[in-house]
Image (cartoon, rainbow, N blue to C red; front, top):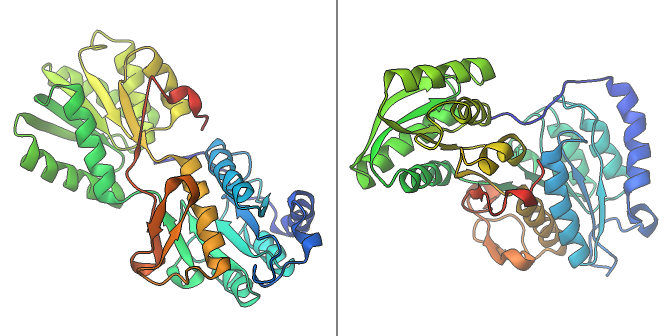
Length: 345
């Protein structure tokens, strides 16, 4: 799936701007001088570092983090590069470590490029929580995983089964034929269909290569080749938007259901005009909220990141640390006409 990501700008300039931005947004963390954890009773300082600033997805997730931090009385900051690139986050990590920030919550642009900087920050006493996009586990204390492959596959099967009355022909419009995550989800969907939905027949899997026009054309071809098609499942944000756009302006609107994984801003018009009943993704606001509470638990030494550790995350309840120091947010979130207005990403 694709979110809004832009490419690199000058790293040298970012090194300067990182310090300035962190100072501007630090919310008092620097003046608190709270290096080394919360054992002294000082406020816990947590800095969110998204892939890039100005991205509605991360605006939403970091809003959730800010809410959590305000709940537990910490200090919140958000810093980040204007444009995403593998090492654009490094100067921000270095600055956070120098300022003695208690915890960094990072969505990594690259699993390895920021590794040395993160380890230096950890050596300086900063806890590192990754969310949305992980690093190599050796570079962080905890990863907040938005959903499992099994959960992503199941929610898509559940949605299409409900929307077509659990019977009829369906097709899958995927991204690239060699996309590892897409193929894993599709394999799991096939198993679920075979085991639990005997009256649904998957007639074709086609590939739009995460290109809008190709996905649009593949949708057209599917509907011409399979006139009895009842539904299209697209586990990619590009594909589902293209399929919905085609169906919304065709004779198939109301006859063929479109679902899968998408973002509210892409899908809003198709949900509101009735082309799409529901689609799924995780709730990024909850993801940021959970990441903030996980950071607090590490700083408080409630947890160490060991499998089986448990902690409370405010309104979301109790969570348990799993294998490879990973915490699972839960099942993907379904967006529909009743809730889509609440989201902007």
